[in-house]
Length: 224
Ligand SMILES: *Cc1c(COP(=O)(O)O)cnc(C)c1O
Image 1 (tube, rainbow, N blue to C red):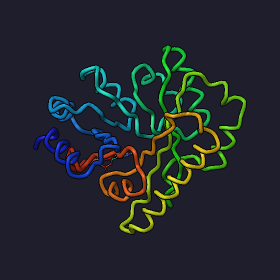
Image 2: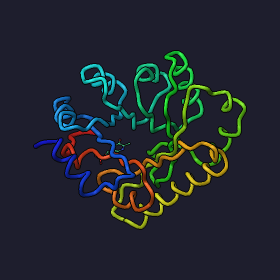
Image 3: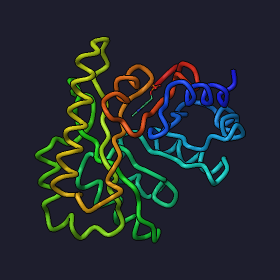
Image 4: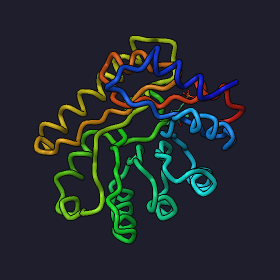
């Protein structure tokens, strides 16, 4: 199996030009990533800090790494020097730590605010009230080394397409509301990260600007 070929075909057949594909390489060997890289693809997502750091160290340095999983504050320091985008900011405390680590590394760290849109309790994320509290606070206005570029969410894992669509619509509405109330002047608050292998078509229809695709490109995983 060629991951490079899978990515090329997937891009050509399913991904509009204005949507960015994050190839989710979690649990997969670096050889698979190198196959994609040699085919010209350089945007990868991981969901565990240790695995992300190990792969970063081993692989070419012009890869754009996305941290898509749940983040613990005490691990931000390991990825702050190089990560391209942290998708899962689900607490103000985490954002403050990212800011601190960004400062230490003299770089502004790109982030998305993760919202809880699914039915399952297990999925992480802010709700709108928490986001408002954060964005209205003085402490937020003092953050100099984070760049909030939009929102991220995960739909309920279900066959019920209407339910998934409703959840993606909700994330899109949250994005618009935040854009209007907090980020009107900020041109690069423009990202909606939603959609995985099983629901990316609906996500694109509902306005995703980034999709995170793993198993369709790399084959099934044995574990999460
Ligand atoms: C694993 C993962 C994906 C990709 O999942 P697939 O179903 O393999 O496409 C996307 N987003 C997050 C947050 C993930 O953890």
